Length: 485
Image (cartoon, rainbow, N blue to C red):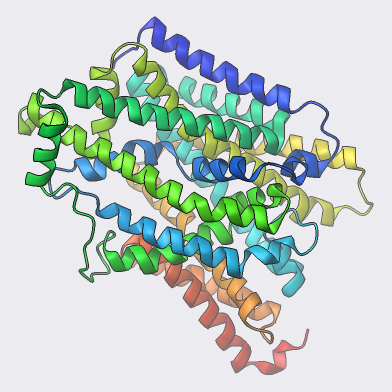
């Protein structure tokens, strides 16, 4: 177990104190729930754009994507094919789903389902979001804490508490405004961290860029396209395009964590601008991370014997502590924290929004005051923060395979919810009970696909949404007498 030096530790502490202080400052003068959960619906489109990108970039993305290109056994740039589908899918969200969220003053994505089907569908989708989001992000907090434990030589529980409490503090006091502006800062930090790491690697190669280019050409590291059709392979052109489109529709069109950002932009036009451009920024970001992976592969092959090469996912993390200079190590470790905290803060804020608007307000017999709802949102932010910290600490008692399985479940539930959105937008005669049948059936189909077949994960959203839609629509046709509600 390694331990970083005083300068690098000071950089990390300065980062943590800085994000908390910014959250406290931005939270001044909050008046109501719209101000707290949506930044009063007037955040700049470019800030929303960076927040979208930072939110979908976790520590796993920052450390594992380089490992895909680093992999000595065929690692290359084919992961970027997924970005093609993610870009196309974002524009599908803009045309199909985004206008639905700006018809009225909505707070959550699932209010659209209430308008079309009824309260039960809205609450079922929202509950599914709350359970899977907090379970998955609690485990993501645990996985990030493992990285920090190995890189910094600190206790695992301490790493969980420091990260979790810092994120809760700036989220609970600053609300969505704090989340978005901290996301912008965190985006800059982790991009800077990746660029600095790439620069250090190139500087340490005796032949510099020429050596890296020759290595990449020899091992086909910059290979981008793979037109093979195999459902079991995650990174082909077809899984990237078709699977990526539906993945983007699910994660960016039917998930409260992203929809809340669009609503904070204040208008459909500004939200569309942020969402549309974000796809290209994500593609460029992926390319940067993959380039770091190729550079790492060249570096390790130059300095180490092949049998001692690190595991793919551990290659970047090991390089950060073993080879980065003092100071730059602290910046890159801050980037690891930034990638994690941007996702966790968004999770807490969106969970509070869903709990308050989809459940709490409807359960009250009297209409609460604006001040009451503001504090309800803050209290629930703390509650969800404690839940995620508890899940992270409990994650120590789970096998790695169990953690991966739970994260897989959380990742494909949005596909089933997307199918319900399609039922609402593309049909008129499907009633609420049939939509719920479709939702349950879609989750069942996805569970079988994920754990009973070799089909790769980029196809999950397409399969989940299609099965939910077909089952719900078929149920309404087979039992038309039950459609009268």
